[in-house]
Image 1: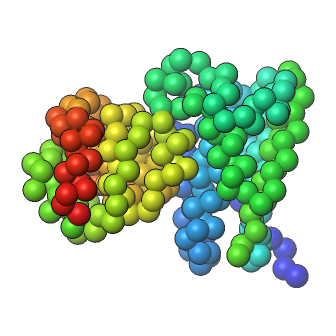
Image 2: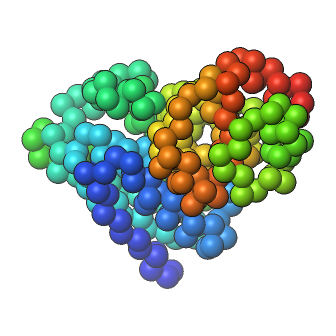
Length: 141
Length: 108
């Protein structure tokens, strides 16, 4: 079996306006690799939500994307404040985003639930004061 | 109905229209970007009062037909420029969101 293609993106935490660049890049890569539109949509939306989360909460981070013909994996790693209660963070509508973020249409508490919805497997590991690692796997149907 | 036909029929202000012949297949209205991303369909006309740069990213991710900024919401110059750069159809109207949705529903 061939090695998966690997893409790595630095997510800049300083610039909220540029959040989404990595998702757009991966969307283009997957399109040029010939993946079906539904898979591309799931991967790019989940990646965008993850990017936004890292920018809002963690001052940026790194996104690694591993692409194989039958599955796509994304690993998001940050060194932010961590998530004290992951079950609570997974609840729709729960958010700790500040009002400035809400005023531009984010912070509705939909990010992590959306990511979960689009993945076939999602695992969050988080340590308070150390950071968070989100693993997402998308099976190509 | 195409984006340019809708713009003409309703008298929308054209901010950016690199793809005038894109067909509008459905409509969606909403201002919570994660909600919109989770529910809007490809090829839709999206009605929103949001005007920050992230609306362009959402439109690009979902492959929307166009974004229609309603209620006379002010569109910053950098967002207009970004729409052109990313080749996103961006239109504007003074109509309230509901009224604009009615027009889309009636015309497409």
